[in-house]
Image 1 (cartoon, one colour):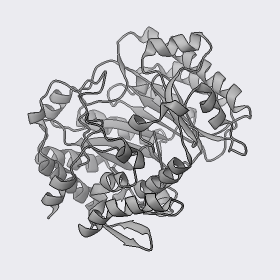
Image 2 (cartoon, rainbow, N blue to C red):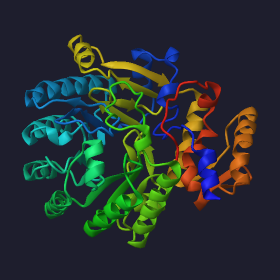
Image 3 (cartoon, rainbow, N blue to C red):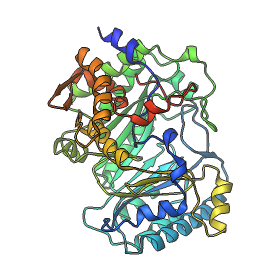
Image 4 (cartoon, one colour):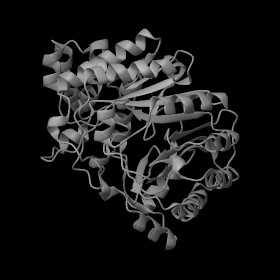
Length: 448
């Protein structure tokens, strides 16, 4: 039965870190002025989350679809940090009132490419311009091979207490295929060091469906992971999107990828092993121990999802600084230039380095909430939508009900346990923009 469902629903689909998803943004309603106006809405909260994109990496990981710039020249650090601070000061002028900084996340690229003293300069400068509440959350992504004791100590002194290490897989042949190398001993050592220095939540990122990856590879990687028992585990499906401009996904062929059936076996086996050790499945692709904040947010219905992924912090505004970073005012989205030269050029002209975006209309705002509820809590409803939109969504949901993946009662949708594997497909039933603008070219990775 499951194999038939996998064949049926294994189609390209979004991961829904936003709605509308980036390929379906309507840029006819967007410009710098409309973006600024969306940030300055009356009675909007002063609370913000801050994502800082640090794109530099010393080597290319060929599984990665993120915006990155490969270099071993560390003299790029200071010019980039000065650009980030100039962009931040422009946003301070736009926000007008002193922001309440609820969350900072350093992503990449490789944030630990940067010298700790340079990160301290960047973060100290930003923090001085904000009001810092007691429940602030600071986190960063670290590479196990180049995250030093100095990195950990410096960021811990700045208030960081969460770190996520990219592992992917421990199999030597898989590591060669994806050009990502770190030993189990290195990962264990840096995880223990993080805990010793006071990091209360350490996360490991693992990926299934990688080239040349077998079921036994996943089992072996999970066995090693639970020997360390990180507080959180992101167990992602590999997103094969080689058509994306600037993508490093090369060095292997389509035939090297696990079949959809095997890929699902990898996930189900990994999930079973993690749950047997006390991990709780959170939303899509995430697991956490019972005492971790992510689990508590999920259980208390406070889980949130945005361009940083799942988070325990809810703010209307999320400012993204740096090349390719995406910002969210709740009423609009805006993405910075993806090209570093274009990013620098805009700032040199005292212009926000934005390249495209979307201003949400009334229906977008309603659908956004529906999809967010599905992704975070596996429940949603049809309240507030036009009758025609309700009928269209109900029609598309009927097949999921027939396949026993959801319950529908009084316009309330509840995803069953069997349906969680198909949550991206279920969200697509609500995605009016995707359905209205079908395209022949593939835009998304496969859902299963």
